[in-house]
Amino acid sequence: MTREPATWRIWLHRGIIGLLVLGLIAVNVGVYTWYIDYYLIGILTLVGINIILAASLNLINGYTGQFSIGHAGFMAVGAYGSALISINLGWPFVVTLFSAALMAGLLGVVIGLPTLRLRGDYLAIATLGFGEIIRVLILNLPFTGGPRGLPGIPPKTTFFWVEAVAILTLIVISNIKNSSHGRALFSIREDEIASEAMGVDTTKYKVLAFAIGAAFAGVAGALFAHFQMFIDPKSFAFMKSIEILTMVVLGGMGSLTGSVLAATTLTILPEALRGFSEYRMIVYSAILVTLMPLRPQGLLGHLELTDLLPVRRRKTHSPVAPVQSEVSGRGSGRGGEFQ
Image (cartoon, rainbow, N blue to C red; front, top):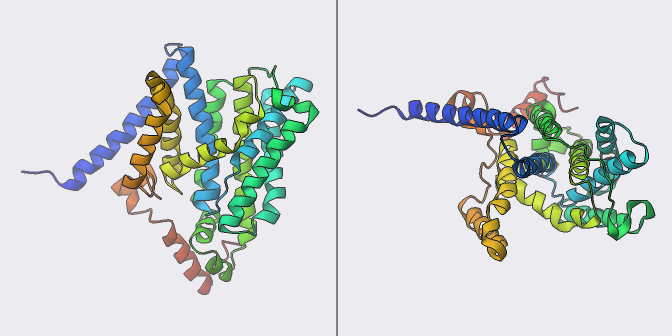
């Protein structure tokens, strides 16, 4: 006698969720009891920073469908802004984090208003140019240290701060995704002209997504600066933006848990392959090239890990479906949530 497929699937998925929760608890116990050594704590800290970066870029690229490849520029603004505030003014660390978010978010609005009227490749080129402008400014401004970098940053970043900010980032972006504003973002991703025709203010929502994503990238930059205690323009070059974009694409455009999975994998994998010495990056690239033909839509596609649970699947549909429901609702007088 064989079991019903739904039964074992339920227990399998519950087991996966349970293992993830137990793993998170075990990591926290290991870190705070110093059972995990300083090197591994450093890797876990970088994992948390990359999760913030990947999740924030997913809000722009995955949810709104805007192809931005200048995310490292916002990270640089937050990193240098918080570092200079700490060195010159000595403000508390939490204030420097808010300052980094504010600076990067405002810059996101300033840059977003003119550039987000562009689409596709033009937007990608514009955001790439923005990232390079930020890097060149850092290279030439006297108070940033120029190409020599900025040393003497106070070591304020701990695993607690990174974990707290990463969880906060995931909660905020998840709430946006599951709100009417999130459905407006998905409608822009699916068909911008149609969403405009139905009354969605596409420019406002694109700038909003750009500003929120930039603010979280600025906070990630601040955490990175106070963790490394030294930053230079090379840390925020074009390849850093590509690295973040790779995490989003590998995890799945529009999947928050996919971004977490990909950021964790792509941060730990290069460290795990250090034993291969000079062949390390070749093996790393070969793994990526092998994965993409097998899962071209990313590891999780548009799905979240909780969507795999049959109980949730009856309640949660594809992101496109609620958009269609909202669109039809406007015609019957129930609309207006997009405005």
